[in-house]
Each structure stands twice: as structure tokens, then as C-alpha cells.
Length: 467
Ligand code: URP
Ligand code: ZN
Ligand code: ZN
Image (cartoon, rainbow, N blue to C red; front, side, top):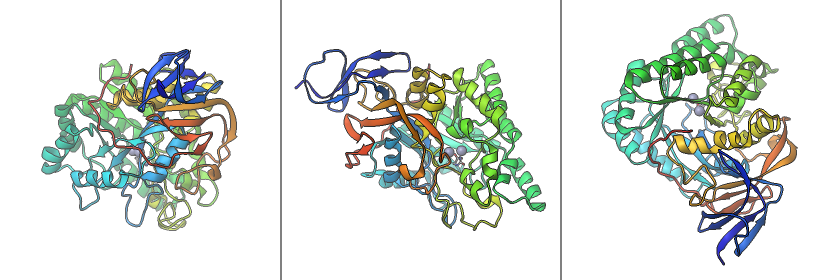
């Protein structure tokens, strides 16, 4: 037999084109693309389906320390199971150190948690929330050199946020090691002020999470993060951009010649702040930062995707159980929004939402879909060309997509550890049917057929440039 597996009859999608081809796979790698490839031990018939590069979700949070008494709803097994059902073949979680750990210990801990428990491949970003001489002088440089070539800094969240000086100091390390700095851009002092004002007049419902994090909070921090990166002389990625004014800052910076990359997420394309205003405590299901905005800002984010201004579309999967005092109800449902853990689940629904709302509705092309969900993530974070494309020599990470599959998102059909989805009842056209990770069929006809957890951690090369 020439191949372990041939996928026959699919339309093969890349970030640049779409063509009819069979895919020959041997030893987990794509060995041939073309017609009449010959013999294989197994053939998958894929007539009427798209073969897409397996999704890469470069922004997910798994088993991350989240504060006293709070537990994330997913471990590596459940998160990667949910991810592969959603057509993903690589996810990139963040390593955050516990209070008593240094960054090196945190990374070792994450490797241990992930090892043997992943259905698909993972690669860790770092979070830098302690700026001391050991972190800057030893742990961070060593970890960047060891293939953890990107890290996130926060301008918000007490205990996580860095000062401008601290951000400059870590950017200087990124510059020396050619690493990618990812920034969560929201002004914590402004949020703190607005939170106090809101609570003073009794505005404590989940909706006030959104009113105390208005657009200027994000716009100002986006401008400041970019300015700090200009001063330090490093490229940066602004993650989870939620609105048009922050995107304007990114456009202006690019016109000045700054290398700034931008990511948006399904919540900023399909949800609004009104979702946080649902009756009772239901709004807590939508509490994430930045918060969903309004329809005008949704339209601005769609325009940014259509015009190629966002290179990345990620889930920011950050799952908590709603009906639990170790989740969204950590302080019960009567106390201020300030206590609600920030984050929503979305790793499984990311691709279907963009396909249905983007490709089916004619906003983006199939090739843009591949770039936004896989190729650009691989390029920007140093996984390309092994990951993120269907090319000879690349890993056989492939999602077979049924463009005609009609469904409605229901919590009962999903595989994450949360007890809800923010998209309950959302109508979808197009769904991933079968997903291969390094040539192994993991999900077939929407069933988990391989429970081996063969996923591994991927050390990365230096960040590259999306086209
Ligand atoms: O609310 C969110 N986005 N939680 C996850 C942590 C982060 O800031 O990305
Ligand atoms: Zn963030
Ligand atoms: Zn996040």
C-alpha cells in the first residue's frame, strides 16, 4: 500500500485557494495531493465535503488558576475533546503560575496536566504576571528559547495587571528573544473607578460588568499597549478586540509602520451587552472581558474580518460552570458582578459560528475562513508549515466539513465541561463531520472514534508573519 489513508473527493481549502484533490496520508503526514493517488489501507469518501486545515485555536484557558474557590470547567481531556468535536486539531492554552510558583514550575505543572490527556496537539503560551529579576533574567528567557515563544500580559485584573514600566521590561525580554507579546488591553484603574461608582448606587447586576468596561477603557489601553511596543521596539498582538475604536487604534498604528496583529472572537461578532442584561443572574453566563458591545461594534468587527484587519479569530475559551459556587456563582447570585469569574466557553462552537455567519452569509471566502481559523495562527505563533495548511509535508491535521449540515447549537450536544453555552438556540449551517489529528481519525461522523489521547505538546519556532 502506498498510503495509510486516502481522503477522496473533497474540495481542499487553503488560505490561498480551493481545489478538488485527493489527499494521501502516510505516517501522520500529507504525502500527496492530486488525483488517482493509488492504493491505501483505508479510504475516506469525502464527496460534497470541504477538507480544511484543522482549526488552531490560539487563545484558550484550561485548568488555569482563577481565584480562591473558583475552578475552571475544563481539564485537558474535556477541553481537547470539545475542541476536536468543533473541528480543531491544535489548541494553545496559557500557563499561569499559582501564587507560590515561579513560571518554570507553572510550565512543568501544565506539561504534567496535559501529558497523556489530550485528544489533539497543544502548545502553551506563557502569562507574565510577576515581574521580578528571576522571571525576567532566568525563567522567561529560558522558556522562550525552549519553544514557548509567546506570552500574554494583562493591563487589567487585580493581581494580574502590569504597570507600564513592567510591560516595557517584559517587552525588552521579548525583543531579545524575538518572542511575540500578546496584550489584554483594558485600563484597570478606569474599570476600578467605574466599578466603585456603580456599586455606590447599587448597580451590582451582571449587566454592570459591561457598563463598567466601556469602549474607551479598551480603546485607551489599546493605544497605550501599541505605544509601549513602539517604544520597546517589538511587534505585538492585541488579543480579543471587541470594538471599532480599538480597531481604529490598530489601523493608525499600522499606518505608522508598527507591526501590530489583531485577534477577535465569536462573542464580539454575535453577542451584545444586552445578553448580560438577561433576567435574574442569567447575564453572568455572558460575563467576559472585554464584554460584548453593541450591533455597531459587531459590524465594525465583521468589517475588520472581511478586510483582513484581523488576522486571528480565536475563541478565548475560558469555561466556568454557571450553576456552581466554584463557577459563576462563587459568591452566590446576590453579590456584585465584580466577583463573577470572567470568561465563557466557546472552543467547540468557534468554527461553526464563523462558517455559518461568515462564509454562508457571504461575508468572507472559504480561504479567508482557513486563514482566520488555522493558517494565520500557525504562522504567527511559529507552527507553520507543519500545522495550519494542507500541503505535502504538513501534518495530516484535517477537518472534513459538511457545508450543508443544518443544526441549532444546544448545550446538550456539546462536549465541554461548562453546563451552558452562550449560543444556546443559535442556528447554524455547516458543521465539522470528521477530524483527523496527525493522520489519526479522532472524530468520524460526529462520533469520538479514537479515545487514545495521542495529542502532544508542540515546541514552537519563532513567530512569523501572516500574509
Ligand atoms: O473574560 C475573559 N476573557 N477571560 C479569560 C481571560 C482573558 O482575559 O483572556
Ligand atoms: Zn484576556
Ligand atoms: Zn483569554
